[in-house]
Image 1 (cartoon, rainbow, N blue to C red):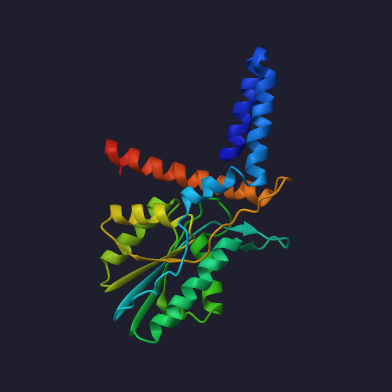
Image 2 (image 1 turned 90 degrees about the vertical axis):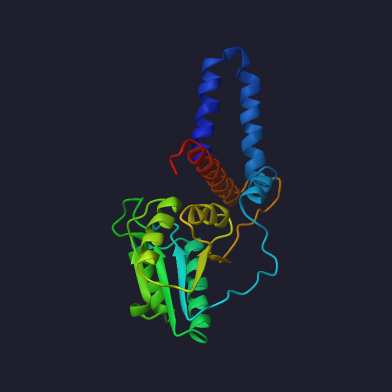
Length: 239
């Protein structure tokens, strides 16, 4: 959506400023080629997501909550609602963390946070539930939070759940590009969970534009704008 808006702005400028039409067309083509070929997408992605190197294992406590952040839903070719690829990695990482937790801790819960911002037939949390069950996470150890629409609401609604229970350790599972913004939002509610990164996006450089590079650029811009929005809202008292 951000890149589409950028393209629309270029188009509007081309229509309105006839004298600058040629440089605007060249500029728009150059920007989108740099994004698609990876040369501009890569620095954007580096700003948005931390580099993952030798991440320390999570520390579990007698009562541990593993927080799985939603990342949307999509319909597959059979029109069945399923998690996107990045979310499948988050689910797998949450299930692994749960299995590791149960080896040392008596109480391990997975809190799945995700509403239905896409207005599909089910919420993110409800869609992810069968995948956690398939990965051997018992239903009684899964808590569904299925009303949040943004990362900020994830943090707010999960903090309310945590306020009703006592946990000794919190673990936050999400993709590398969402982790910086998620930690900011959770800190806003006085929470400092241990970050567990499920997956990271990567750029493929080349001469020909790649769709995946454009998706990564869109994702990076979404996160960077979200972080900027967080600081602006905090400054004016909205957060």
